[in-house]
Image 1 (tube, helix red, strand yellow):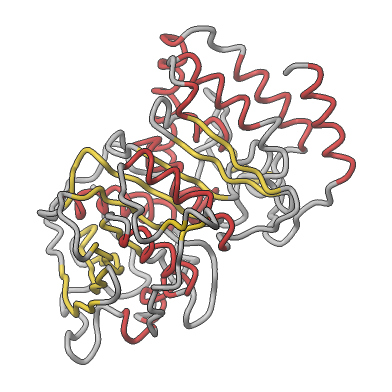
Image 2 (cartoon, rainbow, N blue to C red):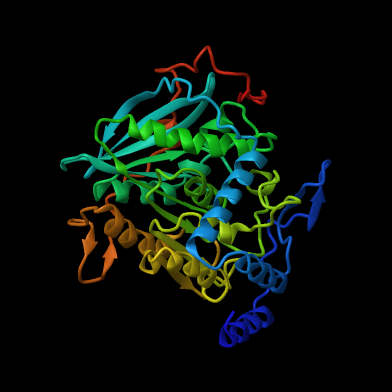
Length: 399
């Protein structure tokens, strides 16, 4: 790290309080010598030292690609997805179409594994000609009856992207939204595994749609949806654009077992962190959105330079960007969505006409119709819960 960057980093350590809402114990050793890196596993200074150690393991693109392959293998092995499960039939359900101003919404689900459903909503452009890029929208740990994908801010994000010409799939984490409604608990011990596999199968799902361009696949999520946003391009090269929001940190590994409850970060053979995992998206376009009010407070001087150096090895430094809001808090609020929209417009070739206001230089979200959870559910009186659905809480066989 350059001296001026280190000086800025030390200053940040002294003036920013620790964001403590989701911290777990520093270390949880498991049988077999693997270690779970959870919560604030590192101090911020130790994270800088770790990045320096990791950077010393490669000096050119070929060496980095060897390391990247090892990291991918460790992620999949630690998540119990090595080898990848068979791609069983999705048996997709898409129904209850609702037309709004410039976009439509449908309730949609598919079987990621036989009898294990991923619930979501499919947003599509109206009045535009495809094929369209697809954007996956995982969500964060917002609880309550209208949490997860049902939240108004998630609906704004999806509807606005659809109005600009994207097919958007917004889907539940285990134990949130409709998954919670049908009896699943987010504490399920396969949460990280099933959510990662569910995201991989979500790409399969959108690529089966006739109006989707298979070569333009984006993903963006915030907080608990952030790890899904950077883990997916790390293990699946079909993702062409990614925007992880307020989650890429070298010292914070996620405070939930669905983010860091399996040995994907550290084994006897290899150590890594979420900043380096995000770098596995290189050379594909990636935007890091960070704030001063959580664990991404150091992104401009710690995580972003490390990731940018890897993009530079690829000769694609222009493909990595960071938008930082030092006075803002955790979340995917309006201002952060305004940072994401132009990046998706540029790299997925969306059409912002009628949405982007050249005077205010903002993307208009006022055309969004906020739906109730009941409107958004896939399964209801008109479409009963499938008889083949596995019992909530069951262990899902993968191989």
